[in-house]
Length: 223
Image (cartoon, rainbow, N blue to C red; front, side, top):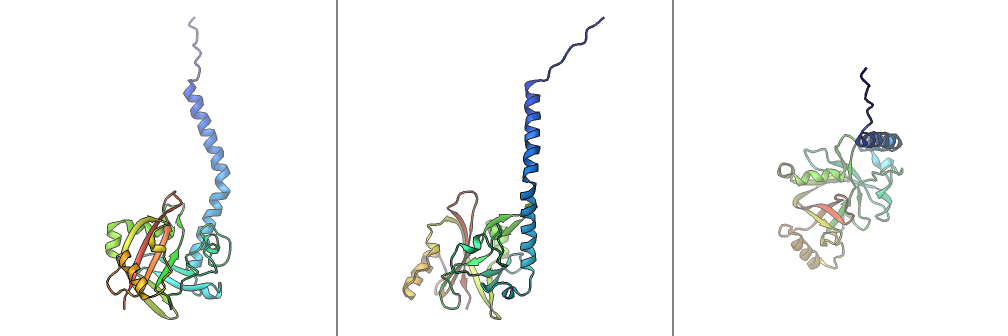
């Protein structure tokens, strides 16, 4: 009578099973975070669709949009540049934060304005917040989207995009300290702005996992 051979599991089989079990447990632990992120993403979309942000938040300043794209946000301005890193335009705590203007800026009075936003991505893979600025790394998008608009007090300012670059937090593009017109003109020339540019708008977001890397998009005011 033939004896039945006993087969032992190969070590790799145990390893694969262990990995599968661990992955399953990690997925379960992450479910609350995934749900939380989804709800924040949904809430952010609802806020963007609101017709009167000024009633929700006194820090509301203007609206930013890029024609013929989905890039359209209410912009807030706080008393510092920390609050809206983790606060939505409603004033509620949010990992997505808000699109916010540097607290030192005023498009009605100063020649350079910087607007910040997180580089975020949704669970479906779509870019959120200023993560959408990544589209400017694609040549086709750049060719078909050449201006940034700011809507404030029933007026629209148009800025022709002249620079898109990956840089870091030490870039001169973050300079807001101009004592006179000459200093701003020197800044504009350094940025590569068109001749006789009177105002520059800079959009800024983090890029990737390196904390000091930034993606910026700059536009010159169209008179």
